[in-house]
Length: 249
Image (cartoon, rainbow, N blue to C red):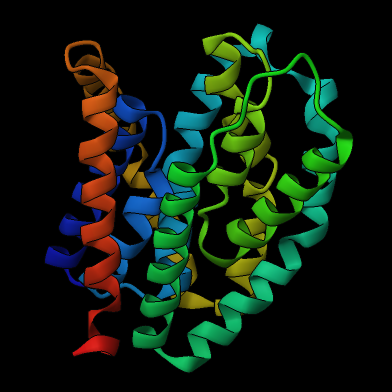
C-alpha cells in the first residue's frame, strides 16, 4: 500500500463514518466498494472497515448503553456468530477468484440490500416472532463475514418493533460489535501479512472515523433526514457500479 492509497483509504473511512452518522446507515456499504475501487483487496477493505469503525461502535454503544435491548438481541448475536464462518469462507473464495469478481459480487449484494430497504417497510409492533430475529442475525453473520455489510437485515428487524429512536440507532451497532474480534482474528490468520498491515492502519485511522462521526452528526442535524438518505443511497449506487465496472466493461 502506497502513501497515496492509504491517504485515499483514510478519506474513505472518514466519509463512511460521516455517511452512517448523518443518514443512519451505510459505513460498510459505502467504504468496502470504495476501498475495492481504490485498489485494496477484499480482506484488506473489510479489515480497515472493521477496525476503523470499532471505536465508533464502542463509543456509540457506551453512550446509548441504557437503550440496548440485550434480551431481544441474544438470538441475533448467537445466529450471527453461527453463520459468520460461512461469510469468511465466501470471502476466501471471492479473494481467490480475483478483485474484479469480488467487486462485482459485493456490488450486486449492495444493490440488493438497498433495494430490500426500499421494498420492505416493516410495521412497528410490540413484539415479533423470534424466528425473524434468528433469520436476520443469520443473514447478518454471513454478510459481515463476507464483506462487513451485515447491517441492513438487523435494521429491518429493528424497524419491525415499536422502539425509540435511540434504541433503533444502537441495536445494529451492539449486534455487529460482537463480530469484531472474530473478524480481526480470522482475517489476520487466513490472509496473513496484507491483512495485518490493514489492521495496523485501521487502528491508526480510527481517530478520523471519530471526526467523521462528529461531522455526520453535525450534517444530520441541519439537513432533512429523507434528503440525506436519498443522497447517500445514490452515492452507494455509484460506489457499487464503480466496484463492478471491471466485470461490465
